[in-house]
Image (tube, rainbow, N blue to C red; front, side, top):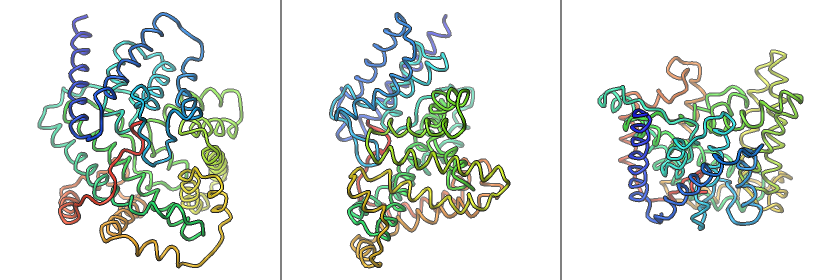
Length: 409
């Protein structure tokens, strides 16, 4: 009893620290957006303790789909999507977290402070677990977790933010410009979301708590199956528990995968592009598994960049007419793409070059010892940190827009 009370007090302290930190670093965040998720999650916990409704986890998971369909919340396609309604702030993440915990029979009053933690809601990793690691000394925690903070900040601020200067390319519909934008936007989403996830992982680690490491070097993958195992791992776990496992018991692999990706698509937003994106990835995920089963690893590797780039092209553009025009893949030379690249300043171009080099390093050296654990150790060595800090000082700027692509909604 005493132990549970101490645990609850420690979670409350972490919640308060996170709220203060979040309010301090965010220029536009209102106090109500910190308190509303806490009150909503508490109300739901109270309701759940009195009424055990069947399939409530699925209704909860798709709550954000309903708000998206009604126009109450923005679609989660990588562009800025902060909700103006304080009651909806962070809805997609605390609803997915609670749905997962209910399915695992682990949701209780003690989960309230974890699920509604402001730093998690603001940055995106879903609160699958929140474990104390205070048994490690502060010195050991600092030595291990501070490099994650430095790497995360570099990815988010130095590489990710300047890439927003390329966003105007979404309006071009020729195949070269469309694919160029898809590549750049993929890099932006990765370095923004992964950077914040790693940074928050490091911050909580220093404080004495372990949360999911939300990315596992997805570009070290040899096929799309491995890629999705390393991308937004917390959401992948939610989808596996809620949809894949139950569907796979009753249906074939294809239908189970289709159900997973359609559910993921609807969670991001109820639009044509997301439905198309879900169907596209479900098919190529299934196809890659079938090819791998006949011991052909080369074709899935060749398909990987095509699936990632075209998938991002579909994911990013919610303008149906423009998306359909892009998917005709009409060739109009390199002029539009060249003009677009020349229209930006030096910092975005440098950020693009650095981002491409980091992704290339993940892929090219994926079989080396330092890469095998897929926990960004190659960026956390003293030599790598020295280079990142040097590049950070050289190219630090306020170029681009700072926001969390998978937080705030």
